[in-house]
Image (cartoon, rainbow over all chains, first blue to last red; front, side):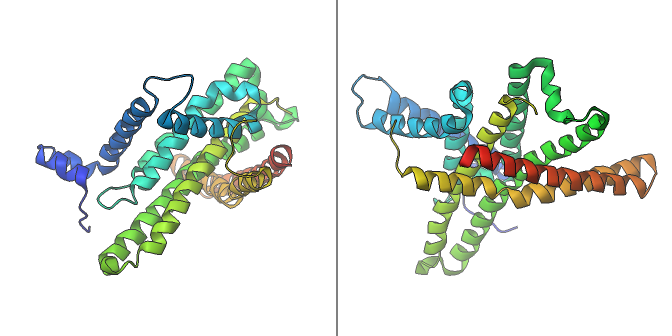
Length: 229
Length: 79
């Protein structure tokens, strides 16, 4: 395998965690993103005031845009799940973007990271369904005809597994591809600004994939909240 | 209400595009998952090739059911 230079890996290796840092780059980098998000939140929103200053203004606009985006689809009763949606968007967006900085690696370019988020979405979707409908939630899986109910259960089960898989693979594939192209271009023509257009496309892909992941999570939540037909 | 960076039309288009970009993947994966389940059940129960065929069929149905659901949802959410 080719050797890249990653700051976090080198720092951890210098501290004596060499094996761990080399084998679990996606984990250490997602820790870095988490620290970045926590520090950023404390820094920007520490000391909230009625008349917001720069940092608080920025955060308020971000959160409000996301909230409007969600409430448009789920209706006001979906607000309870907004923290999950906002977290997932900001986390994925930052994870995608950090890969554009030389010396860092996108945690989302590893399938384990994206699968973990897809599984969280999957579990929360069904938790929401059970919370809103109780035992009747099973009706979502049985279809309208009673005689076909066992068949529909299998078919719906496959459909729901396909959701998890498509969430996982879409995000992973896009970001992994971006990382690989950038790696190759930097290796070959890094000195002559050739990777620049791909960097631009990388920003676009990072944003679009974060939005799509969030949108699908919202749509799945809305589907779990509505009545079965 | 609220702050927004773009017009309503553009927002709706982007939302619909993002949502509809899932059509292909959800169809392919439903079929693949169905066939995969069938394949491993066959290996486990030693009934090759019947369960593979049956679950491939289930996967196909699930794929078209996903398609149908996406169509229905795109009507409710994006029009």
